[in-house]
Length: 363
Image (tube, rainbow, N blue to C red; front, top):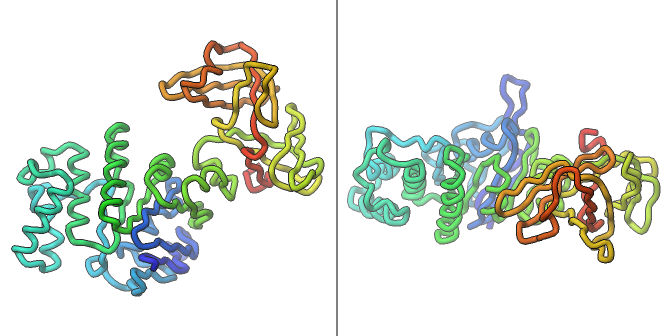
């Protein structure tokens, strides 16, 4: 059964500026779904409409089959965690967590037991009497989560809750949130602009572009088979080449890329159609042994820069007048010894290429 359903939800401001354009979204019971997109795309508006903080201009919001579109926020069974945590500075950790229970008229004894349970679950036992100003960012985040969960909501809504944390703490909290969700099996919707965050902790990811959901898929499908050039470019890094389709061979097209030559792509285009080819840096393989060439494509050029970051190496190279990026895991020794000015040859598999009509890619 669907836990959350948005049906034809739109939001327009000032009678003209459309933030959401009749979006449909279904979140299953126990699912962790992320809404991903750039600033201003409408993702936070969708979450706030779900929470009851904003009224939609059109459409319905259903929670467990019940139409809650007109219900005020405090009457919805939703726990909400904001980017700023929104803790009350004059209340202790325990009182912050208990606040939602008081507003719902939960009895004192039951409220105390539920607060103790939430404090233990979020590992805040030694912090219950502290004030928010005495807590680190990660501790404040756990308090905000405890306050949202203590009311035992049907759904947990997270509005970019990790964006104020440093990189290492953000990664740790990301893991904690996912572990918590898996233990509790609470249906969760996260809004984020961070692609890595969405891919690593979600069951599915919905990508919003200009107020429309353009793809909703499991992380592997979203990354490997984005349905639009916009999704491909937003979710991870891509190399881009533009050309013109010259012929079709068994469901594949041959594209003539200026300065590069012919490349086969795993999609059929009309002869003469302008085509944008995109592919991930990780899909390029450095060829060091000319007797053993992996993959279907082959291209030679010159190294511009090599950057090593510990887990992987980035090689920027120029092929004809095209600059492309290759990424190799650090244990792949094919990149070692390369330096700016060195010749380089790369290969790829045709099935790893992404191809779109050039006008869809902003060409």
